[in-house]
Image (cartoon, rainbow, N blue to C red; front, top):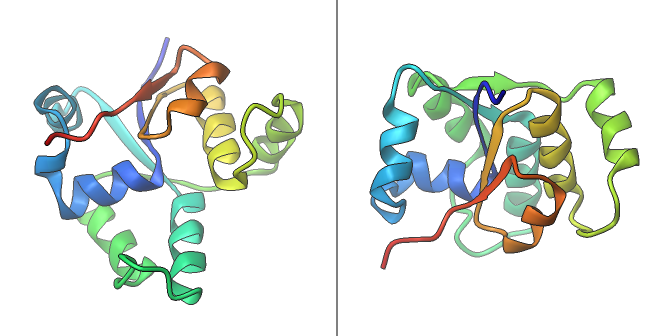
Length: 134
């Protein structure tokens, strides 16, 4: 039984910086105090990599996103050795190392992984795709 939600990097950023992009039902689920909401250290690592590469739309620092997520009462999920072992057992449906780690973490919790990436749903029924609002 899922214990809550794990946010992928795109959903984490939208939730913190542009929540109106999320569907109302997703916003309601994340605001419900009965649901645990996790963000992974892997997302902060991904943000740090993109910032260091000078990627467009990454004009914020990972420590600022970290602080904002904690202020929002999201739970930080560290990367553990067990998570990395689980990545080794995942089939190669997807090649992005950050996404693969997030899938492994969602399966380990267990939690519903909220993602914008349609390719991840093949891994588990715990993966739920979020469609941006127009």
